[in-house]
Structure formats: C-alpha cells, structure tokens
Image (cartoon, rainbow, N blue to C red; front, side):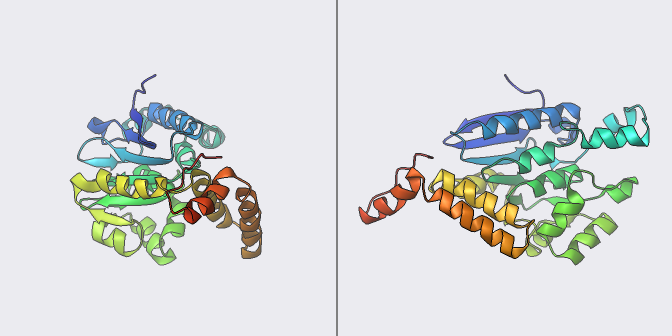
Length: 265
C-alpha cells in the first residue's frame, strides 16, 4: 500500500525512504510519523534490504522538523497527558524507528534539516550532506526544546562544547561547519547526494549482510556500556557470527580467489 506522506521503494538491495511533504518543507505531522514507523518495521522484516537511504523530497529541505501549524491547532492537554503522549509508542517515536533499523541507514541531507529534521538525520548511521544544508536544533527560538532525541544524539555525534553551543543558541551549521565537527561524513553538490549515498551503499552491500548488521549492533549497543561489558558483547557476537554460513564462505572465497556469494545466513 502506498503511504500518504513518504515514498518507499527497494532497488538492488537498497531501500529508498523519502519524506514527501515538500510543500511543507517535509515537516513531520502525525501521519508522517505513523508512516515512517510502519515503513521501518517493514524494512526490518525484508531480507532483500541491505542498506537504507533516507532523504527528503523537493529542493528546499530534508525536513524543517515538527509541523508547527498542526501543533498550534492541537487542543491543550494536561502536563501528565502530554508526557504520556510523548512516551507512548507510535506517537513521537519515528526517530527511534529509524535508529532501530538493524542495517545501515545513510541520511542524504539537503537544504534545511532543523529541529526534528536534524534529529532524524542524527538517527541515521551515516550522513551525506548537500553543500546547501543548514542543520541544527533551533527549538529554543520557539520556546521549546528538542523532543525527538536531539539532546542525546547530538553530543554523541559532535564534541560536547559544539553540541551545547548549537542547542543554547539555536543557530544551525552550514555544510562546511557540519563537516568540520564531524556531524556529516561527506559534503557534495545538491544533485550528487543520492549518487554519493548509493556509492557508499554499494560498498556496504559487497560485504556479508549478517556481519554488517551484527557489527552495527556491536558498535551502537557498546556505546551505552562500560568498556569491559562492550568487549564482552563483541566477543559474544563474534562467536555467534562465526557459526554462520557466510562466515565459512568468506575464507573459502578468499582461498579460491573468487568473489564471495553471501546467503545472509
């Protein structure tokens, strides 16, 4: 079934997820949140998808964040109910759905990527940026604070002082600044971001799919553990993956001087 606010297709083991409200700068409304969550679930259930490229339709924005017009029209509720809505699964957890994709996610970012748009970009594993990006967390300029992971993911992506300056001032970074602080991996012309993301995706696809998914889990889960526990996790996952058919195929293909044929099992 087609989605109302996003586009999704799979081609050559790459899942293309495109935010599709260009007339609203791809701002997140309730429907887009629901569409993203549903799509991410389908991605995790599809063995054909090896890498995901996440981008935004149109030329002006990856995403300008929360749909403030929808927010302004929302009937006010109590503080307790507001809190319950925010933590309720499926309400504002689209960023968690993206970060919960168990294979690499490459953000192809252009134009404005602010507020929730920046937070969604931070939920990606890698980020390719157009040279026209403006990326940041501007919520303090609207009397609110980031509410979709921004205060937690940004300090994990850039030095603490840079993260604090960004959230205190609400000033977005340009492409050169974002690259310098490590917020994005590459900066390319606007019309080359998908091609660059596909180039990276193809390099990933050459590798064993189970190994790629497992190494993603090892890295990201390990970040939330003390070092000794992270090393134990790595040892456990290494032992587990070594029993797979692909783990046997890799050395065999090397010895036979041929390209490996991965089966994903």
